[in-house]
Length: 300
Image 1: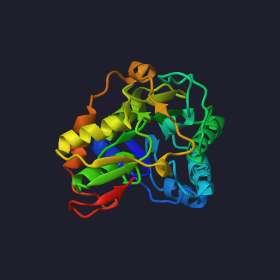
Image 2: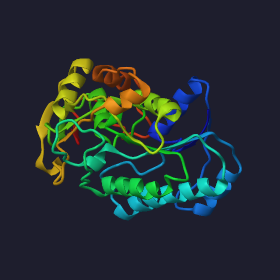
Image 3: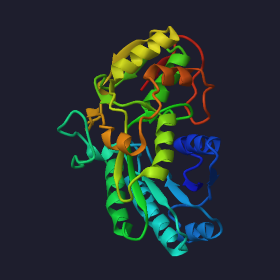
């Protein structure tokens, strides 16, 4: 495959490129501003590709500027699809990354793709709006939608909870302040997610939506416990009301049945293995570094 990849410099994009190239695929990553349709059209006119993976987005649910979420996640994708359509190049599949956050607080413990979305924040709403908009192109472009559940790994920005906690334990902070310890998420490995994307580029049904998930959920309390065991460090854990979100998705665990039917079983990465991989890494430039000293009090 010759894959046109957007968001190549981001957390997932860097891992996806590595996975794709390791498997012998070519990855091209034009640089353009998603809010500039003319720039997108110019860049796409200069390259050839057989598949498209669109990862470029604002992906932080707590992003401070709601308007930019819609400009990038919704309108930026619109600009890309228009450019792909105008380019007229025959491609096999276009993979658009949405998010499991669109489900909100579902009424079932395990979420499959038939559950009605109920987003509770602007990030999730921008992703759902993107999906609806992109379906207007479904009869002209070979689009596949993916809804990844929470995942993590080396190089993820410490604005996200798991890398932030990893940095705290690596720095041997004396105390960590957190919000709700009982919120439950999948914490999959980014390498599993990239493998799913690569397989879907080959075998996904056009127009279909796939949950990228394992079906295994963990409370934040479980993550803290595993980090304590792996690092042999036990900071004081303090639940602080100001870190509890007023609108919180309490449980977000997916049903991988449709995904597995399409691409087979994926490599398994136990949470402990992913956390150890992260602990063993040097702190990234994209994380908020903390001095490696004891006696530090870190707030999350």
